[in-house]
Image 1 (cartoon, rainbow, N blue to C red):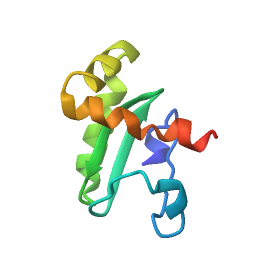
Image 2 (image 1 turned 60 degrees about the vertical axis):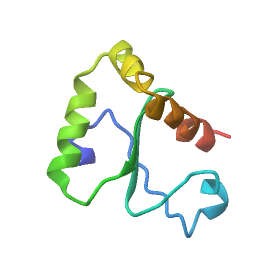
Image 3 (image 1 turned 135 degrees about the vertical axis):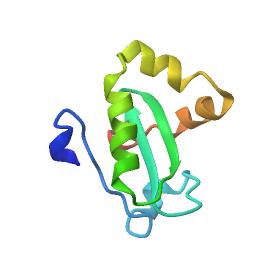
Image 4 (image 1 turned 180 degrees about the vertical axis):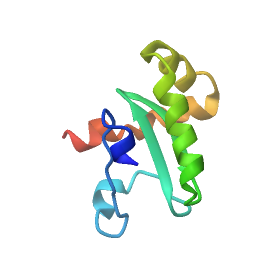
Amino acid sequence: MADDFPKAAFRWLDIEDEGDLLEDYDVENFPTLLIQRNDDVLFYGVMLPQHHHLRRLLETFHEQTAEESHAYAHKTAERQGWQAMNLRRLLNR
């Protein structure tokens, strides 16, 4: 998937190996996926390992402008709550 989206960064975090880093993240099931554009969290939740669903989701977000992604990320109360899950800031500490 990373080969198909060369401008995206993919990072695997194992809750068992990096539990201290991820302790504030509410991971209820596996795999939990977080998709972020700049500082906007666009998706945070469980996604079954079906690559065609992930591909379509990534394509949709890839087609958005940064402004559209920002509006999408803040449109609902649920998405606004996701903004606390900013992995970019967490990993750049």
